[in-house]
Length: 257
Image 1 (cartoon, rainbow, N blue to C red):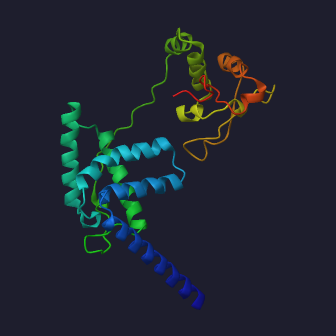
Image 2 (image 1 turned 60 degrees about the horizontal axis):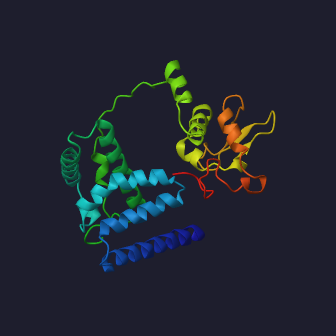
């Protein structure tokens, strides 16, 4: 019992010291707005959690308008009404910029990003009001608009043939065949190196080292007959340098952008 009480007190003390440190840094910094600092802390949190760079960019894109709208106000003082005012402001800015209102999916994405952001602030004891008191997440009361699930859109046979036979440079064709017959995400294919491709007969496979999800980092079957363009490409590098080079490398041995 004494050990449990001591451990609980130690954790509370560490949490309090961390909160004081963050609050002091937010109040003493004149170069960055409070909202921008909180967004930077959130991005660091996502990076430590192993979130893909593309996921972090999407969160930053969705939360940037909120940070600009919030300015120097204390995030812990916000109410559900304040967030409703922000969403109304965001919708008006979106329509002014794009000429049409945001779709239901875009609205759901923005509210979802706010929900994850405020959940992080609560867990990290950063959802503080102007008086330093801890607040409650107002996003819980927001309702996302319904978004009907669209049916999967598969390529028709003539579209598939047109995609694979289009007249493009060889290195572009190899990328198309690779994505078509392996099912790799673009980011996964971008991170491939020649060392990740095993062309040993009866053991052909691609080792996916970088993936958006944990399950995605695995070995995927690879068939020579399905992707002859990819197979011929993988033999164009010197064995001495192949392991360090990107599968679709540029003249400087880096992955193309």
